[in-house]
Length: 462
Image (tube, rainbow, N blue to C red; front, side, top):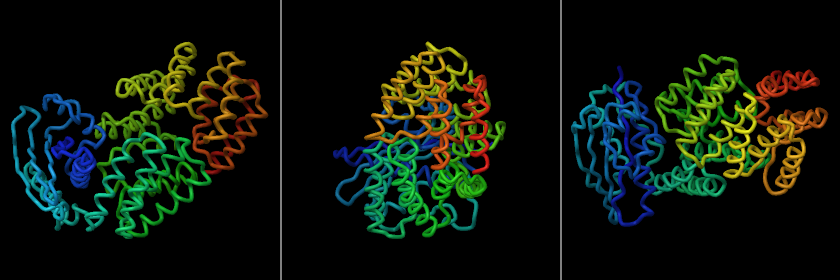
C-alpha cells in the first residue's frame, strides 16, 4: 500500500494579513512537488485547506483525508527573511516523525520548497523515481517576483467565486508573465480562469474562447510537460470543440505527467461518462474523491456521473453531500433539484432549485427552475422564467440551451428546436448532456421524436 500524506495550510505568523496568499502558495507548491511522486498518495489542496484555522485532532483529520501522515508548518516573513517551521506527524498515534526549521532569504524560496519536500520523502521512506531530483522537482520560473505574482493569481483562481476573483487571478498571472515571458504555468492559469468564466456564464463565448485558446497554446509551446496545460486543452477540446478523440489524448498526457491531480481525475470521469463508459467513470470519480474528499467541484462532477448513469437517488445523495460541505454553493442545491424533477418529487425539487437561484441568479439556475415549472404543469411560472431570462440576457450570458430547455418543457417544440440548433452551431457545452435530458424529461412527450435529430447532430459533431 502506498504511503499517503496531507499538507495542511502553513500558518501565517506575519503581522501583515496580505501575506496570507504567500503562506498558502508555499503550502500549495509543496503539495504540487509531492504530487509528482507516483509512489506517494497526496491529499489535494482543496481538501487539505478545509482544515485551515481549525484546531482538530490530527488522527481525526487523517481519517477524514484517508492519509497516514500529515505535514504541518508555520511561516513568517520579515523584510527579505523567511522563517519556516515544519513537522511531519503520524496520524495513527499522533506521534512526531520529523521536524525542522528553515531560516532563509526570500531569494532561496525555491530551494526551501525542494528541501522540505525531499526531507518529507525521506521521512516517509518514499524512493524517488528517476535518477535526478529534477525529474520530480520541476521549476516553472527562477524569477522570485514572478513567482509571488503567480501565487497571488492562484489564490484568487482557487476561490471559484465569480468574475471579480477570476479577473484578479488573470491580472496577477499576466503580471507574472510580464516579468518572465517563458512562465508557461501562468498561461495555464489564465486558460483555466477564462474557461471557468465561459463555462459558468460569466463571459460570452466570442470573447472567452479565443483567450482560452491563446493561453493554452502559449503554455504548451513554452513547456509541453505541464499537466495543467493539457487539462486546459482537454477541457477546451471536450466542452467547446467537441473533439473527444483529442480530449482523450490530452487527458491521458496530463495523467501521465501528474497522476495525483484530483481535479484531473474528476474532469476525466466526466469525459468517460459522456463517452458511455459509466463503470470507468465511477471508478475515476471515486479516485478523484479519495484524493480530494472535500472538493466541491469533484463532488459536483460525481453527481453528474451518477445522473448520467441514471442513478438518480445516488445523485441526490451526492447533492446533499455538497450542501453539507458548503450550503452557499448553488451547485449542490441544483443537483438535488434536477434529479428530484426526474423522480417527480416536484415540491422538494422546487425548494432546492429556488435556493440555488437565490444563491446564483443566472441562466443556469433560471433554466432549471423554468424546466421544473414546465414539467410540473405550472406553465405561467415557466413563461415568467423565460421573461426573466430575456431580461437577464441584456447584461449577462444566457445560453441558447438555457432558453431552449424551458420551451421544450412547456411543449413549444418548434421554439425549443430553434434554440437547440443555435446551441449546436455554437457548441454550447450543455448540449453534450442533451440526450440524458431527453431520456429523463422529454421521452414521454408526443413530439419527443423531433429531438432525436438534435441528439444525432451532437453525436456527429464529436
